Structure formats: structure tokens, C-alpha cells
Image 1 (spheres, rainbow, N blue to C red):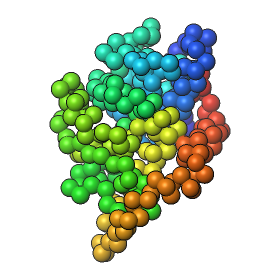
Image 2 (image 1 turned 135 degrees about the horizontal axis):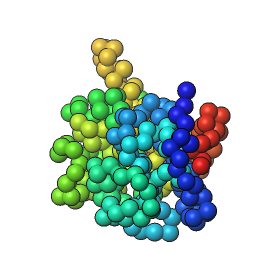
Image 3 (image 1 turned 30 degrees about the vertical axis):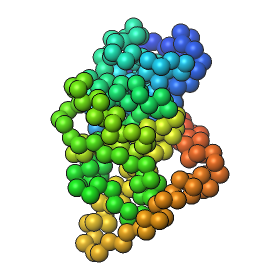
Length: 260
């Protein structure tokens, strides 16, 4: 049974923002609903952000306190790089979410969306010294663009930002050790598809290790060509573009209120 976000009485922003911003709001709200649908949410304690189209210093983030299956396009909070709310909204934002995401958005202009999770399998692998292992076909795509950041406590301090962005570099998969997973994408769809892949890799690894047998590693030479293989298998469209329309149709069959 889904939540009823209309009970929160959030006024529509459909006619008060640009068409481009509204589409980004709908896609971002969909990503929150999908994270809940796939059981990657952690009550209210993770976050997905998307840059407001046409800006360098504004992005959308979840209203702190709403469950992910309650989030709508209109409830998303627009903030600047200092964490100040631009929208007139009663909702606050997660301070840890602001620290991590503002750091990445500030330097990675290709990162239109940043998605962070605290899944059980993701945290389990993040606690392993060797991190992601080359155990599956899915793992080669993650390993071809993966970075790590050591745990420094809850991400509340501005002085951690330079180390976050240094460690991420130009990668799109980011493992926060003892903490969770993070992906960046050129769109909400791309960031979500990358997280689906990242989470799948961690789940496969935990299950493979639980079997207790000797593990077979993928040849490093195969990992080196992962980018080329990905472009071939998606016919250059990008996996996000291939899967996103279908994911929205799945959501619409369950509950279309994320579009409000």
C-alpha cells in the first residue's frame, strides 16, 4: 500500500517554475519513489539531488522528514550552494545531504544528478577492505569508473568537502567506506541506472562470499574494455535512456502522485 502524499497538502508548483525545471522535478520525484520501490531507502536518511536546469548554483533535494514514497515534484526543495532555501516551503533539508551533494555539484558540472544510498549490501561491501571485487559481468562496469572515500563520521563538516571531491575525481561510482554508495549522472535516469548496477554488484558479491567457495575473478583486461562494451550493448543511447521510460510506466501503474 502506498502513502497518500495529497494528505500533506503541498501546493503545486507546476505553474510557478519553468518547463525544464518541472520535468527535472518529476524525474527526481520518480527517482525517490523508485528507490523506495526497490527497497534502497533508509527511512528519511539518504538523498538524491538534481541541478536546476540553466543554473550552476541551485539544486533540488528532498524535504527532510518525508518518506521517499511520499515525495512529489512540488514537495522538492530548491536550495543554493550555501544550503539556503530558495522556495517558500515549510520543509528543512538534511544537513549531511547538503554537505555531500553541494561539494560534488560545485565541481562536477557534468553531474546533473547525485544519488546516495545506505543499503545493507552496499554498506556491507563498503566495510570490506578490498571493496568491490571483479566477480560478475555487472562488476566490470562499476570497476571501470569507481572511486573510494574513507569514513570521517557523519558528513556535516565543510572541511571534508575537498577530500570528497578529490577522491571522487572524474568517476561516476563512489563508495563511501563504512557508509554507503553514491553515483553521479548526466541525468536523473543515468544516476539511477548506475545505482541499480552498483547495488546489484554489491548484492552479488555478498551472496558469492556467503557461499564459502573459492571465487573466480574477471580478467582485468576485460574490465579495461568495459566502457566500449557498455556503448555497444546500449547502442550508444546510454542505459538510462533505455530503461527510464519503462521505469516511469511501472511507477504510473502503482501511483502517479509523484507527478504532482
